Image (cartoon, rainbow, N blue to C red):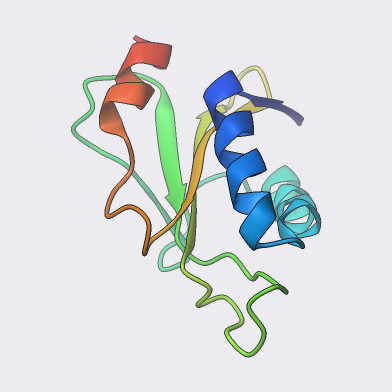
Length: 114
């Protein structure tokens, strides 16, 4: 499984790293899990529907962040990625905290994968 990141994802991550210093390590652990099971697994992650795309776009709702002690997987961090099963590739689209933003940026997803 190969991992790629959109340029806007890198910008989001850089901004969040100022607040959550362990986020890079936490994402490394998420990548290890995604290598084994990249598909949606409720209640931890689910597929985003009604985008009008053939690409499988998944939202991960439960990410453990060590910067937020005592919260475990209820950290409030969200990760959006596109999974290309045939190519064994995952492209990270967006990462955000639920207090900063209510939902994923659907226009960003459509613009990059249409």
